[in-house]
Length: 87
Image (tube, rainbow, N blue to C red; front, side, top):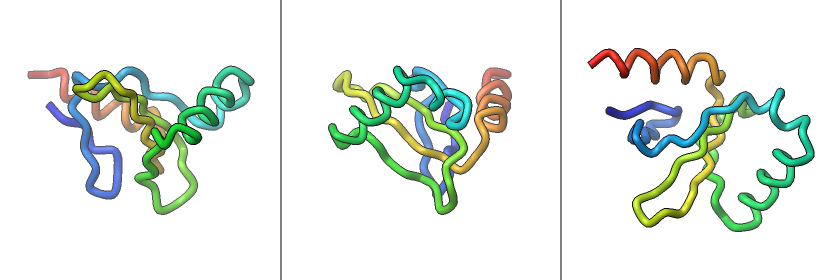
């Protein structure tokens, strides 16, 4: 199953590590450091036309992580992911 993140970008549900609310989690210095390191290592993909509301961390087949910035709220993405669980 796949989860649509925005701008025609979908990820395999099995590859999702976490879905986070950007406003709440970016208050932590640890999360800010993680986001900065991901940006520095070119691991960030912006799939948002507007200000991003959430980020989704995924693991690729080669083990590398990719961080997607999405304009969709984390609650919306979680609901979509839960709906996909009904298989």
